[in-house]
Image 1 (tube, rainbow, N blue to C red):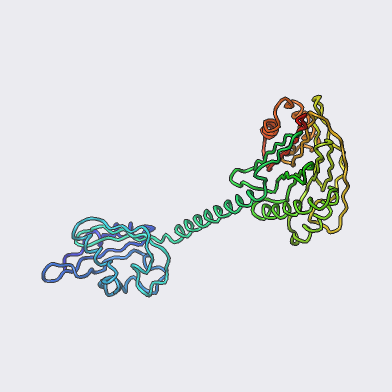
Image 2: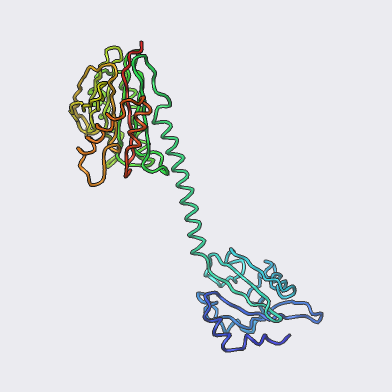
Length: 387
């Protein structure tokens, strides 16, 4: 055997190694009669390198590495140590299982990093337990994959919830906008729908499902389908709301989401709007002369809370150039501000943009919102003199 590396015997050096956060060991090459390295003798382990194992440091000092860790001969670890001493090139492994270098009595487990460098005719090795770091990284990756899956699912639900195209009818122009409060969460509970009931009548829906994310979006799709089915069978908006409430109150689980909604039916030929409310805002009429008026409110309860609720329908005849604006609370609510202030601001802003075409009009209204903290949806119908 060659002489022990002198630094391993120095008290100051030992003290420095004991103070290190890593588990440190020093081994001295054991050579055969031909000078070939056949093993290593353990000359030093710092104070906590065997912490958490049944071994006492004194029980391993002076022993051969392959007696302490027999599987190093077959795992390749002994070859790595030999290469370090023979070539002088360090060996680094930044992520390895404890079982790859520890013995069967080492129950610390987890993930480790290992660095080995040449020291005299032997090596100095530093190992660090990185289990918490690896687990945190894996948890972050898992959360990212979960978030990606959530976004994908919500995108699919959004495609199912919002109409892919707005109906085109002589005598009206329709425009709509949906904007999430957070672009990373593309669907909340706000939504709109527009669909033709027959050759003359068009259904208009603006609604807000309480909540965000997949649960709200999934329920939103269910409610949308309920509306479309009932609107074909029932002409009266109040009847549609009442029947929708009965269905959704059964669909919604206990403490599940509820829906505020305004549902309207537009008779294009007579320019008559019939509407009913379920805990939602009444439509804003922006008149051709530049004034604006909120239609009278007769709000029934939100949908999906209590079975067998009643709603009231109202009607108004409009004129060429008038616009019907239906919207969710993200357009008018601000933090620490009374709702009436927001409603008044919307009416004034709408009057200022009557010169814009419907799609530009709703885009301008959406862009006017500052301090955004909620999703918003807008639906606008303009009456024209097109035949």
